[in-house]
Length: 184
Image (cartoon, rainbow, N blue to C red; front, top):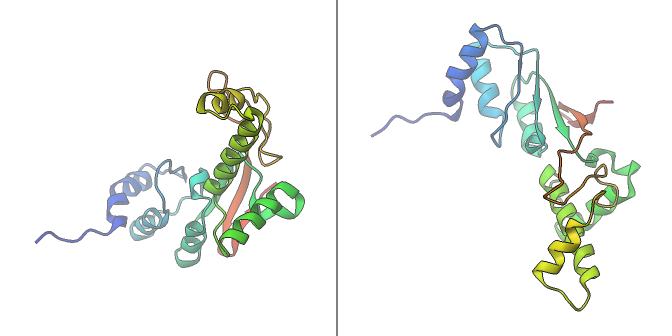
């Protein structure tokens, strides 16, 4: 039989190298859960000063990890309005209501924001197609949106694949054991 490996063991060589190099910060670019990374860092005694993580970690799992491990100062960056500030944005408040009316207690994540944006872009484009509702028409109408905001969820950006660029505006949220907190 093979020995069992904990997922934190997979990160051990990386955090050991970071510790030996005197690395002060970390940015994880692909994973679904920060717990194995933080566990490995704690196991080797590496204490990064801060971490900055991308939007895929805008998820209740990250808060759960912050509650159960010795978590370093960590920030998440988003390209959309955070759900934590829904009281300041009617579109975001409406999205949460629609989500929770359909699935009470469903988590709000970056993927939630992306899904609402895609859904509203599809609905707008399909409506513009009228009786000519075809895939080509929907894609053509969607590509004409050079300042798409998803009703105010995102800063205006071009969704045409030929002209699309990364959204130049981000929001920073601090990870705390009690939830994500907007950091102005």
